[in-house]
Image 1 (cartoon, protein in one colour):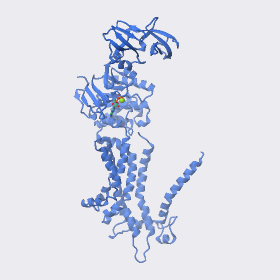
Image 2 (cartoon, each protein chain N blue to C red):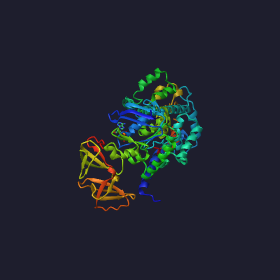
Image 3 (cartoon, rainbow over the protein chains, first blue to last red):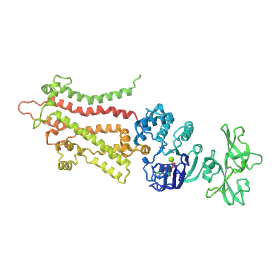
Image 4 (tube, each protein chain N blue to C red):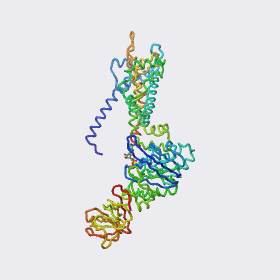
Length: 350
Length: 283
Ligand SMILES: Nc1ncnc2c1ncn2[C@@H]1O[C@H](COP(=O)(O)OP(=O)(O)O)[C@@H](O)[C@H]1O
Ligand SMILES: [Mg+2]
């Protein structure tokens, strides 16, 4: 059994909303797991069940070899960082960090030691006497982290902790969280709706949709090998291009072109997915793109345009290529990197 | 700095308001420092006279009542104890019952809340006979407990605490739980410090409420040693004077001034807390 084990966990709220469906998941000790999915998909619910803040309707959760379904949150030895930080407004930073330790009956000197160590690690030693209302967003974030770290819990839970920060700070804190987790080595679950955050932080990633884990794997596995239309569309930026097509006798007829010798026996209506970065310009390529707009990011250009049938399409090319608005590009798919999904079920077929 | 006409008008209104409240008190105070004869013959006074110490000493220490044993000082102490008991218990009980109503989401929380709320419609005066019956059956007449106990439940305070607790974000509770707080420590370590402004305000209101109780102590107490200030006020006004004695107007004013001191002290003492809470939003 692994460190944290979820077995057929289901959550139905009292109002009948089924937020999590029979989810099973194992997380190893020291692993950084990220739950990613659109808003309302049930990722917070899943996290809160691990924390003990929501009852588990069905299924079992084991932490460190112990069934914790009925264990009170205060006894689970988990720490959580909330989206709005939930710092204690009437306590200074020192007491915010010390509170959990005091409740565990730890003696004063040890508490002081631990708080000071955590404060140093997070560079908040200078603010220990301040109230949370006198701190900036980034500092509050650190205090929230400090409050989690200082107790040395079995598991860290993060519920979108970066979404209240501005873009620059968010990237900086993302990096710090990752570094910190590697340094402290505590098993962590991080919830986010931002796929970039998910990809950069995760050892392993669970893509969640409608209360179901659609795919579980390392970020690269999921990027390279999405198992469903949803995952393919959710992971990767800019988003994967999707075209309608029909598959018969291993031949795919898409909108205005054909691909032969496809490695599948599936026949019928399909969706063809091509990532913008898996295309290159050639003569007489498969795809003809009328360029509408070019976004120059410096390292890359994002070329937006339309296919012959007016379908929107995106192509990503190195920044040193100059592409004129209104020009016509002929593109090929590199290394047969395309994804074919059953149109009715969204399942990958190639 | 330029003064706008609007500010001048606002200040005039405020000054008028202050005068309206302060002048009667000043007149009472000034009048309490004269001889009763002077006031009877010349009317109320604006300036301080020379009888201040004598009048106040008389009021505080003169023994009165049928038993000739109760003093005004004793009545102030009684009222203070009663008001303090009522205010403290009202605040404690309302804060705790609001805590139960908001955080323990048991099925009957809403009906119970409305039941408490409905008691606003039945103040003590309305239920005075049953209340008296209960208290006297318990043998609590002529005791501080009897004076205080029937008045300690407060729908108003419960309502205000409930509304306040509802504004406290759930994450705070959840976060505290994960930090190992139990139900009691969440109340003491979080709700009490977060609502201290509210507690101070409630305490002030409830103290004044308790202090100005008249009917209940009147019914409850037969022993003079439990008389309260407001009862005493009535007594000194209806004091009968046989023969040539004059009504002791100056002493009455002194009594009134003295009777205002305890509530004023409470307000002065708590207002620092109260205002600090108001300007320093901590949420
Ligand atoms: N307390 C609740 N009562 C009823 N439904 C809820 C409650 N909390 C969340 N939900 C519903 O459960 C689903 C999942 O919510 P949540 O886990 O918060 O999603 P996410 O964190 O992925 O945005 C949503 O449809 C939401 O409306
Ligand atoms: Mg959420």
